[in-house]
Image (tube, helix red, strand yellow):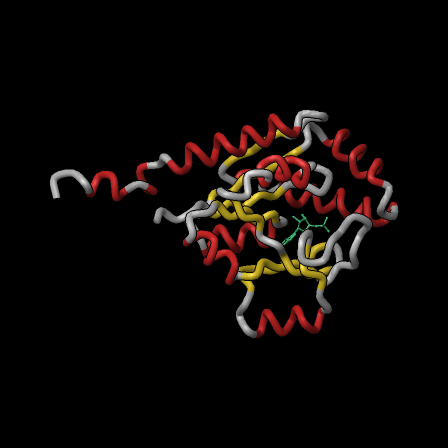
Length: 202
Ligand code: 5GP
């Protein structure tokens, strides 16, 4: 079976990654969303085992020591990491695996897995970004400020990503379609289809 695509999706908090990815994940036959582990407290709407595996710092550190994480990073005071085993399993079953991770982790995956495709989702501009963070109302002013600073850091790595997708207000279906087009094109790359050539003149 043809292996699935490893897809890194990053973007500042407030880019609307979650809503965009929801459209794509409605098609669970072809996509697998990697559920990360985190030490951050649960927020309203979070479901343990679905949004994240919510674990203690101690448990997290044990997983690192056992080499169970593809990558991990500290973000706004909490640890976030990608469990390796389900990724390998789903890729070998032909599913496209989506890693929704921040930039430090994304850079590590790009290095370890050069076959991964990386996409940065951004709001149309900084003003929209701030408005989305403020409207969320689940976070303190201090956290919002930290997330804006983090956004600056993420944007400083713009050119490390293969693709950029703009998520305009009320157009998350358009951003989702953009991502599906990227996946389609990537799967048609000659470098991912050597077996087609090998069928000739062997
Ligand atoms: P949030 O707390 O808003 O759910 O997530 C904060 C940031 O952590 C987001 O940018 C999200 O993409 C990132 N993140 C979530 N899971 C992981 C992970 O497993 N590894 C890394 N490096 N970042 C993650």
